[in-house]
Length: 197
Image (cartoon, rainbow, N blue to C red; front, side, top):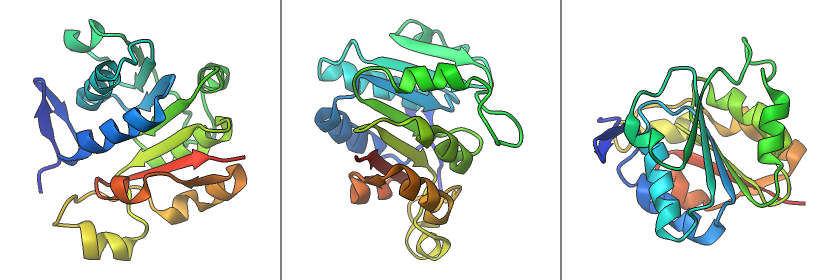
Protein backbone atom coordinates (compact mmCIF):
# COMPACT_ATOMS: atom_id res chain seq x y z
CA UNK A 1 0.00 0.00 0.00
CA UNK A 2 1.56 3.27 -1.16
CA UNK A 3 1.07 6.06 1.36
CA UNK A 4 1.82 8.98 -0.91
CA UNK A 5 1.91 10.40 -4.42
CA UNK A 6 3.57 13.38 -6.07
CA UNK A 7 1.82 16.69 -6.62
CA UNK A 8 3.79 19.34 -8.51
CA UNK A 9 7.05 17.71 -7.42
CA UNK A 10 5.99 17.64 -3.76
CA UNK A 11 5.16 14.52 -1.78
CA UNK A 12 1.54 14.37 -0.70
CA UNK A 13 0.92 11.71 1.94
CA UNK A 14 -2.71 11.09 1.07
CA UNK A 15 -5.03 8.76 -0.80
CA UNK A 16 -4.84 9.52 -4.55
CA UNK A 17 -8.49 10.67 -4.69
CA UNK A 18 -8.10 13.29 -1.97
CA UNK A 19 -7.94 16.18 -4.43
CA UNK A 20 -11.40 15.62 -5.89
CA UNK A 21 -12.95 15.43 -2.39
CA UNK A 22 -11.29 18.65 -1.25
CA UNK A 23 -12.26 20.32 -4.53
CA UNK A 24 -15.93 19.56 -3.84
CA UNK A 25 -15.60 20.77 -0.27
CA UNK A 26 -13.92 24.02 -1.25
CA UNK A 27 -16.38 24.66 -4.10
CA UNK A 28 -19.34 24.25 -1.72
CA UNK A 29 -17.96 25.55 1.56
CA UNK A 30 -15.77 28.48 0.43
CA UNK A 31 -13.66 28.89 3.58
CA UNK A 32 -12.26 32.26 4.60
CA UNK A 33 -9.22 30.61 6.11
CA UNK A 34 -7.57 27.21 6.41
CA UNK A 35 -5.59 26.07 9.44
CA UNK A 36 -3.44 23.01 8.80
CA UNK A 37 -1.55 21.11 11.49
CA UNK A 38 1.21 19.05 9.91
CA UNK A 39 2.77 20.53 6.77
CA UNK A 40 5.10 17.56 6.21
CA UNK A 41 6.44 17.83 2.64
CA UNK A 42 3.80 20.39 1.70
CA UNK A 43 1.94 18.51 -1.02
CA UNK A 44 -1.50 18.79 0.55
CA UNK A 45 -0.85 22.41 1.54
CA UNK A 46 -0.07 23.35 -2.06
CA UNK A 47 -3.03 21.36 -3.37
CA UNK A 48 -5.39 23.22 -1.01
CA UNK A 49 -3.92 26.58 -2.10
CA UNK A 50 -4.35 25.65 -5.77
CA UNK A 51 -7.95 24.49 -5.24
CA UNK A 52 -8.81 27.74 -3.45
CA UNK A 53 -7.23 29.83 -6.20
CA UNK A 54 -8.99 27.84 -8.92
CA UNK A 55 -12.41 28.99 -7.65
CA UNK A 56 -11.40 32.59 -7.04
CA UNK A 57 -10.68 32.26 -3.31
CA UNK A 58 -7.29 33.90 -3.65
CA UNK A 59 -7.83 35.92 -0.46
CA UNK A 60 -8.49 32.83 1.64
CA UNK A 61 -5.65 32.53 4.14
CA UNK A 62 -3.81 29.22 4.36
CA UNK A 63 -1.77 28.87 7.54
CA UNK A 64 0.18 25.68 8.17
CA UNK A 65 2.12 24.62 11.25
CA UNK A 66 4.82 21.98 11.55
CA UNK A 67 7.63 21.23 13.99
CA UNK A 68 10.05 20.85 11.07
CA UNK A 69 11.16 23.81 8.99
CA UNK A 70 9.67 23.93 5.49
CA UNK A 71 12.50 24.44 3.01
CA UNK A 72 10.57 24.16 -0.23
CA UNK A 73 10.52 27.51 -2.02
CA UNK A 74 7.44 26.50 -4.00
CA UNK A 75 5.33 26.86 -0.85
CA UNK A 76 7.06 30.02 0.31
CA UNK A 77 6.36 31.73 -3.01
CA UNK A 78 2.63 31.14 -2.68
CA UNK A 79 0.03 32.83 -0.49
CA UNK A 80 0.70 30.42 2.39
CA UNK A 81 1.67 31.27 5.97
CA UNK A 82 4.27 28.67 6.97
CA UNK A 83 4.95 28.57 10.71
CA UNK A 84 7.59 26.33 12.26
CA UNK A 85 6.75 25.60 15.87
CA UNK A 86 4.95 23.06 18.01
CA UNK A 87 1.41 24.26 18.63
CA UNK A 88 0.85 21.70 21.40
CA UNK A 89 2.58 20.94 24.67
CA UNK A 90 3.60 17.46 25.70
CA UNK A 91 1.70 15.25 26.42
CA UNK A 92 -1.00 17.10 24.44
CA UNK A 93 -2.82 18.43 27.49
CA UNK A 94 -3.00 21.98 26.12
CA UNK A 95 -1.90 24.38 23.41
CA UNK A 96 1.36 26.28 23.57
CA UNK A 97 -0.16 29.30 21.80
CA UNK A 98 -3.88 29.22 22.61
CA UNK A 99 -4.53 32.91 21.90
CA UNK A 100 -2.85 32.75 18.50
CA UNK A 101 -4.80 29.67 17.44
CA UNK A 102 -8.13 30.80 18.92
CA UNK A 103 -7.91 34.25 17.33
CA UNK A 104 -7.13 32.76 13.93
CA UNK A 105 -9.99 30.23 14.04
CA UNK A 106 -12.50 32.70 15.45
CA UNK A 107 -11.82 35.46 12.92
CA UNK A 108 -14.78 36.51 10.76
CA UNK A 109 -15.84 34.02 8.12
CA UNK A 110 -15.66 30.24 7.91
CA UNK A 111 -12.58 28.37 9.11
CA UNK A 112 -11.49 24.95 7.85
CA UNK A 113 -9.24 23.15 10.37
CA UNK A 114 -7.14 20.19 9.18
CA UNK A 115 -5.58 17.91 11.80
CA UNK A 116 -2.76 15.96 10.18
CA UNK A 117 0.15 16.27 12.57
CA UNK A 118 1.69 13.91 15.09
CA UNK A 119 -1.42 13.22 17.20
CA UNK A 120 -4.63 13.71 15.25
CA UNK A 121 -6.96 12.71 18.07
CA UNK A 122 -5.41 15.25 20.44
CA UNK A 123 -5.27 17.93 17.77
CA UNK A 124 -8.97 17.40 17.08
CA UNK A 125 -9.81 17.46 20.79
CA UNK A 126 -7.84 20.63 21.55
CA UNK A 127 -8.73 22.62 18.44
CA UNK A 128 -12.45 21.81 18.35
CA UNK A 129 -13.03 23.95 21.45
CA UNK A 130 -12.31 27.09 19.41
CA UNK A 131 -14.69 26.43 16.52
CA UNK A 132 -17.50 28.88 15.91
CA UNK A 133 -20.83 28.13 14.24
CA UNK A 134 -20.26 26.95 10.66
CA UNK A 135 -16.58 26.03 11.05
CA UNK A 136 -15.33 22.63 9.87
CA UNK A 137 -12.74 20.40 11.54
CA UNK A 138 -11.18 17.38 9.87
CA UNK A 139 -8.60 14.71 10.74
CA UNK A 140 -6.61 12.32 8.56
CA UNK A 141 -5.90 8.59 8.96
CA UNK A 142 -9.47 8.05 10.13
CA UNK A 143 -11.86 5.13 10.29
CA UNK A 144 -15.04 4.91 12.40
CA UNK A 145 -13.57 2.00 14.37
CA UNK A 146 -10.93 -0.71 14.14
CA UNK A 147 -13.31 -3.32 12.72
CA UNK A 148 -14.35 -0.99 9.91
CA UNK A 149 -10.68 -0.24 9.23
CA UNK A 150 -9.72 -3.91 9.06
CA UNK A 151 -12.68 -4.90 6.88
CA UNK A 152 -12.91 -1.94 4.49
CA UNK A 153 -9.70 0.05 4.48
CA UNK A 154 -6.57 -1.88 5.46
CA UNK A 155 -4.69 -3.30 2.46
CA UNK A 156 -7.44 -1.88 0.22
CA UNK A 157 -7.22 1.91 0.29
CA UNK A 158 -5.00 2.93 3.25
CA UNK A 159 -2.91 1.27 5.95
CA UNK A 160 -2.80 3.87 8.72
CA UNK A 161 -5.36 4.30 11.49
CA UNK A 162 -4.71 7.13 13.95
CA UNK A 163 -8.16 8.43 14.85
CA UNK A 164 -11.54 6.76 15.39
CA UNK A 165 -15.00 7.84 16.50
CA UNK A 166 -14.15 6.77 20.03
CA UNK A 167 -11.42 9.43 20.11
CA UNK A 168 -13.69 12.30 19.07
CA UNK A 169 -17.16 11.43 20.36
CA UNK A 170 -16.81 13.59 23.47
CA UNK A 171 -15.67 16.63 21.48
CA UNK A 172 -18.46 16.13 18.95
CA UNK A 173 -21.08 16.01 21.71
CA UNK A 174 -19.59 18.90 23.70
CA UNK A 175 -19.21 21.25 20.72
CA UNK A 176 -22.16 20.03 18.61
CA UNK A 177 -20.08 18.76 15.71
CA UNK A 178 -22.04 16.97 13.00
CA UNK A 179 -20.97 14.96 9.93
CA UNK A 180 -20.23 16.91 6.76
CA UNK A 181 -19.50 15.15 3.45
CA UNK A 182 -19.08 12.06 5.61
CA UNK A 183 -19.12 9.38 2.91
CA UNK A 184 -16.95 11.35 0.51
CA UNK A 185 -14.19 11.92 3.03
CA UNK A 186 -14.40 8.51 4.64
CA UNK A 187 -13.42 7.11 1.24
CA UNK A 188 -10.11 9.00 1.53
CA UNK A 189 -9.68 8.31 5.28
CA UNK A 190 -10.61 11.74 6.63
CA UNK A 191 -13.24 12.55 9.23
CA UNK A 192 -15.12 15.78 8.52
CA UNK A 193 -17.35 17.58 11.05
CA UNK A 194 -19.13 20.93 11.01
CA UNK A 195 -20.09 22.90 14.10
CA UNK A 196 -23.80 23.49 14.35
CA UNK A 197 -25.64 25.78 16.78
